[in-house]
Image (tube, rainbow, N blue to C red):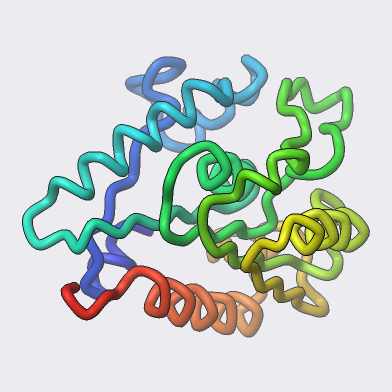
Length: 199
């Protein structure tokens, strides 16, 4: 992910959100360990993103603009960060539990954060699968309604025939057309909101 942005000329930083739970584990194992412990606590996540944003702004050649992107729980975390921090752009790729509660069997402690919509600090791009359940199309519509009511700048795109994790090239859920179109939306969006005349 970071390399994909770096190749487009962005300074990219990918913080290890699971470093406390599983500092030595491989990424998938670390994610599983964190999920088993209920997920990354919201306040810690925001603090980690804040630290990463500060680092990026201090990077040589920075124009001072910072965006965030996340998939699944990362989509929720991108939305949460953009509501708690002063950012310049945020991308929510099928963020689960921005709206709605996790199923009890998931063990996750995440709670909906849709009520933070009035605090959104920047434009938001949302990319969703029309066949997804977390978030479902109804939940995506609820988030859109909340953002619209708060007068926020956002654009949402839903992809027919795509479910959860349609960007994930290493999973059966991967949908090449939806993923390719999604990346086009991402780079257009970040290009408009992060690349200034002094970039």
